[in-house]
Image (cartoon, rainbow, N blue to C red; front, side):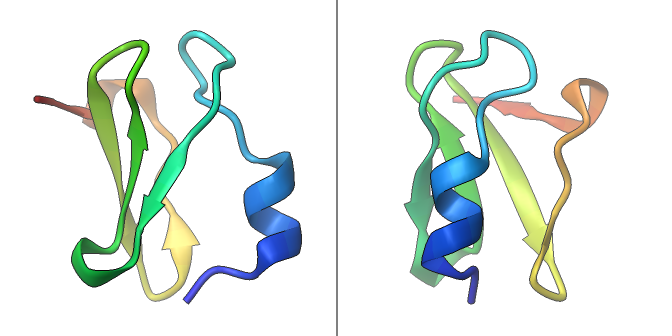
Length: 54
């Protein structure tokens, strides 16, 4: 689980927009870019090349 402090400073690496945290799927979602970033072992993988479109 990501801390509230970390969630406040994280932004989409592509558009610098807000990210929504989906706890049950362990993903960060950018609705602006329509991409998701996975979280592995409580570490967000914020690489644009590894983002998944939705």
